[in-house]
Length: 73
Image (tube, one colour):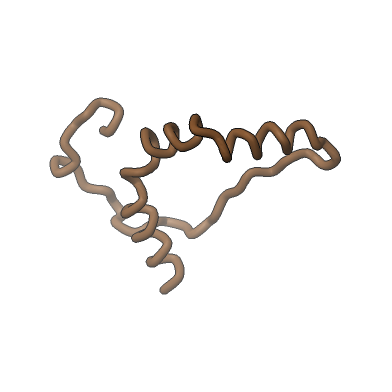
């Protein structure tokens, strides 16, 4: 829907609450300081900020609603 710039009000998320409350993270290989440095540099970069704004900023209210639902289950 978002990739095709379709109006959100024409669609409904079913179910309205998340099916599961699983959280995800990033796993780095042990003893690989070069990989850790690359990831940390990206996280601190302007590129990361642009990607966050472009891809995820509009999702914050949705994610917070899901988090609230998961915490209060």
